[in-house]
Length: 295
Image (cartoon, rainbow, N blue to C red; front, side, top):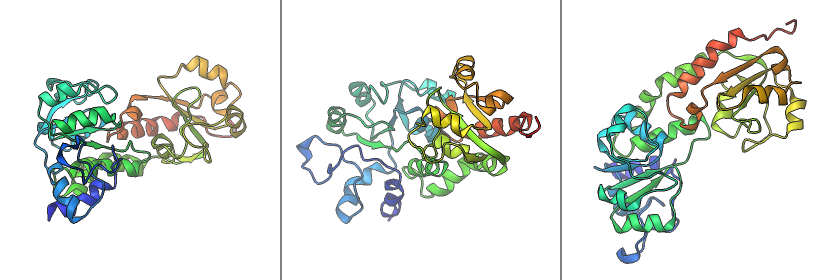
């Protein structure tokens, strides 16, 4: 019963790393992945639930697994999975972009968790070694971040939504208490990359008011449209050269008034509940901006 109950939760936030992988012969060397819920697939995917040994290749996923209380199930990690500190004592096995399948299989995992699709060759090697692959969607909103928590919690818990919501309490609180700004807001991850509403960063901007990049997608907004929109407030990743940025956008109201808040961009690169720190930081600095028309 538990399998049938949890499979829909897993499916809601999973990008299939391979299509039509179920229903093959055992010697087909293809991994068993979640592709649907039925009497036949339930039996085949049951081993994906409550895996005893997991290899987690993606930093955000590894952090979430630890946060949910299942770090003891991580047999190996991706080389960039370095937070929280408890992960550092766990051996590495490549990364999402360059998984070391031979080393991964040395740790006899039941499941390999990644946010980047693996190549067919890598999936085949892992399947030959008895490991299943769970490829999770990178979140494009705060709501889909919650779905990622639920997906991972569902691997080990009978109450994945409760576990996820408990882990995200501070993020929800920070979002609800964020001050609203009257005016046009824009977040830059680089000089060219704008947080459009279809992205997690863009959704976060909406926590504070109107995202001036509305109507654009995939982190792209033409330079002339940025100038025409003329944001009143800019959230700027600390990975961006401030002086080059302000020189390029010198005519913007936000630049002229100094209404630029520089934030830790790494929190968006590895989205977890620690986004609460980013929202709180922005909230604390917004009162320092010059938002009055007379200023």
